[in-house]
Length: 257
Ligand SMILES: Nc1ncnc2c1ncn2[C@@H]1O[C@H](COP(=O)(O)OP(=O)(O)OP(=O)(O)O)[C@@H](O)[C@H]1O
Image (tube, rainbow, N blue to C red; front, side, top):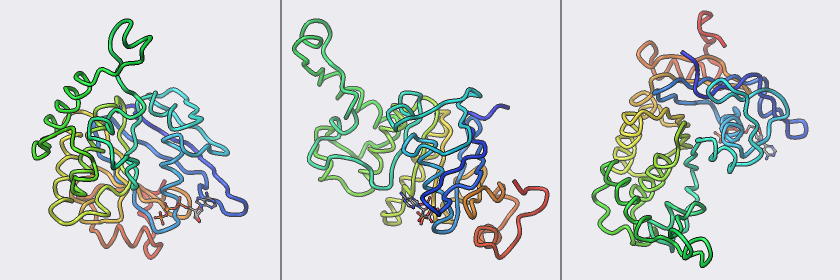
């Protein structure tokens, strides 16, 4: 099976700091791939390169086997890669619908849309409602509600729904449960599984081992700027994963990248 998204030998230097040191990465169709690593291991830099936010100094990124060159996150989005950032990148005062369609508003057909630039609010609301329903976010009553009135979990839900709605190839989630309580985290984990069930592969960056072990099909362990190995959660304990991540344990020879 060919990876949907692949990186080979990515290098990124910041002055004398090597944030990526020939990093490899593979995401296969339909899977949830967790990316774990100690602070400063280079996870964010890898993810930013895959989502167009960082331009690697060297190496290749392939989408569906074809080389891609993302000059910005807009390029990656246009190619079907949606990222849910830790900071969520939402406008709190705007409605759920406005946030979902920010930067890709639908205009009215014909003259009113093309010349008067009028937005097709009804259509956008319809799609927003469908997407939230699809992911079981029925607790949100009113899609014209301002995002600032939502709970943290609901906000994260909107961000996930947005990514799932527009990501045609890959959804990347950076610490989606980091700021959430137990109940809200649970809901977001269920959402991640729902997105997977709809056929989209997911990259999940997380420091939360129980969450990683619950939802991931495979776990990419990043260490010192590159992939140390990829493990299956069924074959390893959480403490082994942490030991490999911190360098206390060598990755098994058969799995070393
Ligand atoms: N814009 C930047 N300028 C300078 N150094 C940077 C920059 N971005 C990252 N680095 C450095 O690159 C290394 C890898 O950082 P990165 O943020 O990718 O790690 P991380 O694994 O995501 O860490 P964390 O889990 O703490 O977020 C670190 O040493 C960091 O200080």
